[in-house]
Amino acid sequence: MLFNEAVESIGTLTDLKRIASAYVIDYRNLSQEEIVEALKKTAPQYYHEQNIIDTLENIYLNPERNIRIISIILLKNILLNKDNFMELQKDVNKDILEFEKKIINDSNELTLLKQTNRGEKLDLFKFIIETAWQNNDNISPDEKNLLEKIKNRLSITDYEYQILEAQIGRFPKNDNEIHTNSEIEEVRRFLQSKGLIFSIRDGDKNDYDLIPKEIVDALRKIFGIEMKEHGYRELLKTKYVRTKKYLVQILNKGNVETKNSMTVEELQNLCLERIKPTILLGGYSPFDGLNTKILSKWCKEIDIPCSGQKTELINRIIDYYDGIFEKPESTEDPRALLIDYFEDLAARNLDKLRKQGVIQKDLECEHLFEQATNYIFEKFLNHKPLLLRGNEQPDGILSFGNKFILWDNKSKETDVNLKDHIKQFDRYIRNSEKSVASFLVIGPSFTEASSKESMKYSALNETNICLISAKDFKKLALDWFEKEGDTEKSFPLGFFRQNGEFDLSLIDLS
View (cartoon, rainbow, N blue to C red):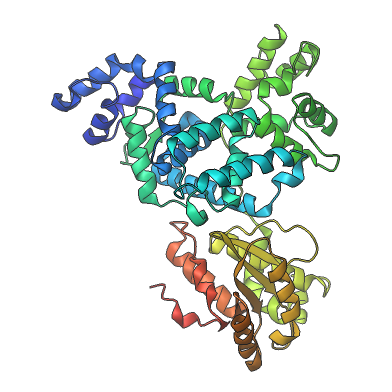
């Protein structure tokens, strides 16, 4: 949406005045119609490149850390990747929170140093960040400015910076606490007052965040963004650039280190993070990348003009994929069918499970019980389990602030006796990269002695062991989803810090 059209769609007089405050003189004394006209007259100031650079500098060095963190996520990671560069405000809030949770989860999976040989640079920068945080338990604007300069000198990406801050418990806030909707709303108003985003309203009075097209063009140039992320992902799937050999060649020539063990998907993710689309297609010299013949053939296949110089063909291809609308995620998940048989999987009711076609072999029961538990955490309780690495691991790990919550499934035909498994669970807890707030054991039922065993363990260690039946776990998840499913609010994991058998009656979801 162009600037003038966006001005006409601004939802309320309050929003109009807030946006006008950036460049319209004496806006307080103007009527609504006069403010609209004044905004149109001053439009070039809103998308003047130097003005936007100055505004972004103000954001990067703002003394309010919430403004520094949320603003960049909202602008760079969310809105600049949305179709038409707009989204419902409630969905923007959700996307910001999901982005923050993903960074925390990625940091807990500890993939950065293992993916490449850049460990020395990353370790150095992590040490610098930790040192900066030691002063008054905060990062001052001057320290932030210095960190940005060091980050750029070491070729550390924004994503890596966020991961490293999360690993030391400082992203997005202290103790890896995510932001609240009210904090996001405060930053939204700040960005409106700086003229970077508009709040527009449709005929049904739904409010959207929008970046006008002219401001998008300036922001993309400043951030070095050539296309939306989902468009780039689609481009990377094409046969011309999806071979491992080609991706490794482009990455290595860009001084991005790779490993022989990397999959095509991992290499594609590195390209998304470190390689611009123009480089992916055209390389670093006239002799790199795809040749004109292949580019022309590609253009013909997607029905766009296929004649011209190499740079023209590349730009047309990028424009084509940049214009692709994001596809909604498929709602079908084969794990959803397992929920009806969750208690049966826990109790190993093998005859019933075979009769209903849930399993074909007895060995599948335990694995499907684990899959169903993952699905419940992810879809009903809104907590995405971390990716497990190595063999000696519990069945699942969840981020819990700057700690972990671990769980293990026990599929048995009889009551689970904790003492039979306590040494195994103790190894998981002691080998954890972060301290474990609680260890969940999910099974059909538990012996009376199990609660005493969990009390004994917690008395000697800092971790509670929570024993929860499959029946109670499923009921809790369904009740929570019925109450909060529309809001997509995450279940408070602190409720799982009960010691001994889980008492469902202690949780009031009314």
